[in-house]
Length: 390
Ligand SMILES: *Cc1c(COP(=O)(O)O)cnc(C)c1O
Image (cartoon, rainbow, N blue to C red):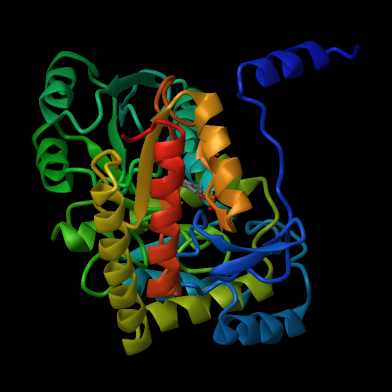
């Protein structure tokens, strides 16, 4: 046996083994999975932009400038399109400036580890995304995790810990596995009172939440109060990459200090052009129409799932978890739904806490009403078969 086979075996035994499922063809609301057409109920392509004709055309035109950018941003990899897209993102987020990163993962590790270091302190929601945790570990700052959305606990930590160094409060805007929204107003107030920077990872809010899709900060009326608004272009925007919408000073600092920004080849022109088209679309009447369709779909599906007796774990958004509990039962749930042509991934530790395995359903604007009704019915039936509901 190789060095890793034993550990892989024990992952299998615990029901925690993971493998890859291959989709053939485009990323639509229905996809071909392992030779079978299924309803896709676990994609973050919330507005259906990933295979939108406008984005595909923009990407093709972008590719006329070449397939790659050839270098990192600080060497010779900053093309006009990077600057144009950053200006467009800053206008969209109403921030002074914006800075692109190659992915949300790279953004979080690069931003957190640059803005704080030894002697500084990070205050982080316990359910924040793994990339924030990794950034915190890289930073070598003291790392305090507060119970999920518990503002009294955060305030106690801010009072008692942190010392004289810089302080960073960081939170997901929409929690990726629970679908609830961070209490941003209170977070802005605490950040001001305790002289901390506030960073919001809006991977699942940007493009979707708020009147004009500017994200969780727009929804909660605090766009001016968030120092670092991070978002990804790979989810609702249907493209790839990520950004930090920040002040001029913070951008300049990140350009000089953020290692994931500095030591990596920049985004290629096809991706930049697609992202630009995505933001135009999200910021247009068509974007508003898609968001309104998404809201209707979310409300219908959530209502059906709750009526079937499932626990949706406080979801307030298009991310609708269905609590199952044990890992094995969760994966069996996924298998049985696949047999009925519905694809929902089961989510297990370490992505979620032990014992809280769930189906993470995600709704798209391009799902049809009848599809969601049928899916909710199938989920209800399997839930009863497996004893998840009565
Ligand atoms: C997906 C996700 C990321 C990572 O973004 P990518 O662009 O996919 O690398 C970061 N934070 C949260 C909360 C996410 O859900």
